Image (cartoon, rainbow, N blue to C red):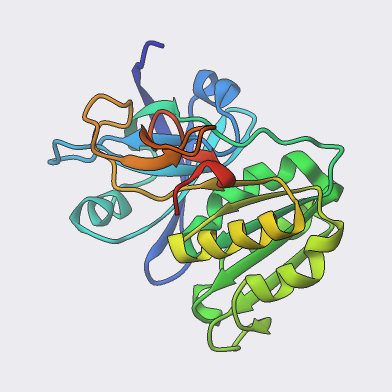
Length: 252
């Protein structure tokens, strides 16, 4: 595959929380070929390495990304203005393969919530979404999810919004009727979800968060251990072979 850097126009910018920003980037060609679970590599002024950001949603000619300021690069990104040109490489990675006819539970944790929006939209009324956050001030995108899915369940670590606890608590109630699970978030959360899915015989696919540099599998910096069919371990790369993996293949 040829990876081309293309300019987008930043047509909308919103600050969702004290550290989370919502960008809408206009580029019709890239929007048409981007799939749920894929990501983009954003060129940041003054930085050599691009920043990988998950695709939150795609609508018409707009790619939507929602990101958290975690360092100097994402801070510079947050200072971009409407009508600025934003250079990205997209779409990258292997995303979720959604079966619209199956009841699917989509689970997001923290900044792993945004990529679940475009994914859950594919299943529509067959989608149940469980999103987990630290507290009520960190909750994002609830209104967006409620437009498209049959049910949205919120959990918070401190109980300040929704269910007091982790995403695995409501999953216990929902998993008995699930035909598939898709999840993105911190590794401990994904590990526990994968364990529950295996115990109940539900296919589970996880989007792994890993530090990336090139985004196309050239630098080999985002390796993850996976298991072969003979149960031996080998390494694949989150940026090219993922970020979505069959949970049973990941060597947790």
